[in-house]
Amino acid sequence: VKTEHDFNLEKQTLVHEAKLNVQDEFAKKEKDREIQERISHSAEIGACRQKKMSLRDDLLNSLMKEASSKCKMVAGGKNYDGLLQKLIVQGLIKIEELEVTVYCRSEDVSTVKKVLPAAVEEYVDIIEKESGVRLTPNVTLNEDRAKDLPESSNGGVKLTACEGRIVCDNTMTSRLELVYSELKPSIRAILFPE
Image (cartoon, rainbow, N blue to C red; front, side):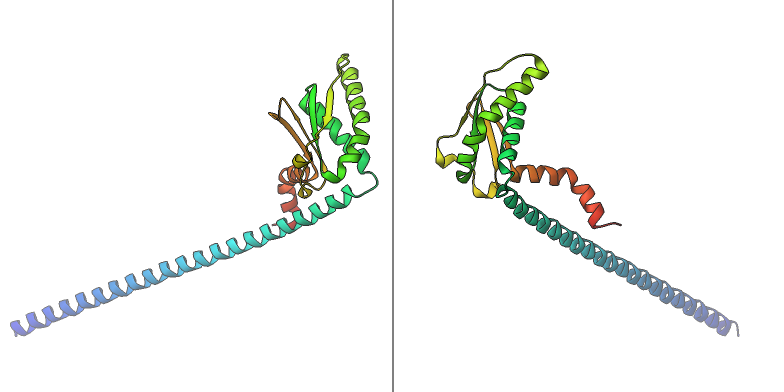
């Protein structure tokens, strides 16, 4: 009777241990499955975010292209002469040098030649008004047509001084890129409110 009792006790212990092992193994497999689900869910979220960012970037790039085409329209407009004059004056103020060379697109050469004297005079007047000093800058138009600005600049001018070591890029494209980089957070906030 005692041996049978010991046998049953041993058998119950073994069965109980086996049940615990099976339960532990099941719990481990369940935990592994949950971890795999979390990993796959996280990967899906990451892929969706990446796709969303890519689509947003594509939209912003298309807006930049559209704005660039609008800049081309400005360069063909009737107020373009005045704009070129203001861009030259602004560049001269930024550079603050007496020997300056102005670069423009091939198609803008005649317009720049026309507005250059007025731009220089406006610059001299501004400096004299602000500082009391009357300057006599030597501002020339680039004579080498091979160095003219490309058509992709969408108009505007580039000014250089000190043999090209000082450069003020006042082309429509550079100004558009500057505005775009400065306003990118607001543009995103308007287009993609969260």
